[in-house]
Amino acid sequence: MLIGTPPVELPQPPLERGPLALREWEEGDAKSLVEACADPLTARYTSVPIPYTPEDARRFISFGRSPTALPLAVVSAEDASRMFGAVGLHAVSLTRRRAEIGYWTAPWARSQGVAQAALELLSDWALGPLGLERLDLYVEPENETSQRVAERAGYKRGALVRSGIALRGRRYDVLRFTRLR
Image 1 (cartoon, rainbow, N blue to C red):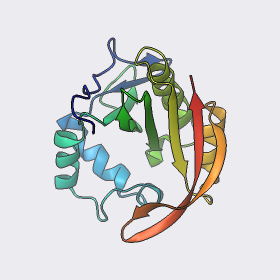
Image 2: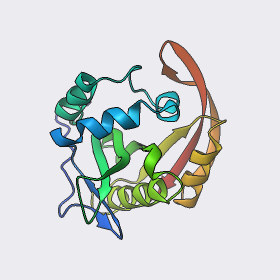
Image 3: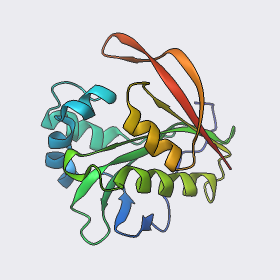
């Protein structure tokens, strides 16, 4: 983070579109977070600890936000206690007007358009009112479902980034997807 970089504020008003809303993580989300992060696909394609414990959930909820990160829960707009997944901005630079974005969907909410809707909603806000000009997201080549989500949400496939991420002591190649203002 650059000295003097202002922190990312929560969207005001909170982001909501159709049946979904994005909100800050809350203590009451811990149980659902543990259940979702215990899922093999969530664990495989994210950086969550394995096994994911209630203490991991509490730590994430308490310390997930920072001046360069804005993790948000994807919840039901009608019942904000129903958690469907996560979406968030990372490596945010308001001065450089760019960020990375990531998402995952809880197993009980998959194949319902949740990931695409949440990605579109946060991307529209970040490239609109927040004032960013570029969002990058990274997907492993074998995660074809996530690639389709990114493309349907307006992201353009870019280069293969060799050894682009490190998860649990191993480096993985990733595809970069970009959406511009």
